[in-house]
Length: 155
Image 1 (cartoon, one colour):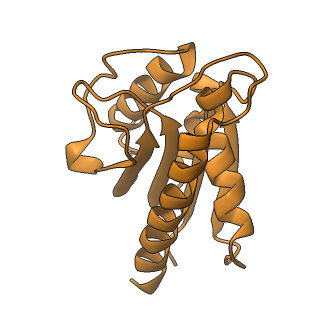
Image 2: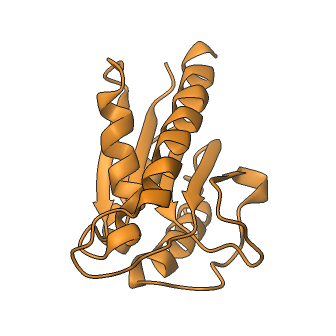
């Protein structure tokens, strides 16, 4: 049985920066998932999340991301497509994502399957919650996450 960890990154205090955490909460609540699918509010824990990255067969990460060239939409990167380095950082946890993946690979414990799903933020204001565009992206991100989880569970 494939173990799956679903991790949401971000700081919910800074508006759209909390996108990853909000998506994981909504995805977990969207269905009754088997117990080998673990949902993690990773917040801004950085390297403290290493065990969650190394202890699974498949890893799904949600985050507020800014691709080098971007449109305001939800992006999905599979393992081979993951950006080697997050070019624009909004907080310390983004560097942690790149480092976590690199350390897991160095340890020989990189998950066989990795997916990053995210969207560019619109509002990073303190205490603002998700902006209207990000709430719309949240629904799309949850749908993309559900589809990927269902595929992984069917294997």
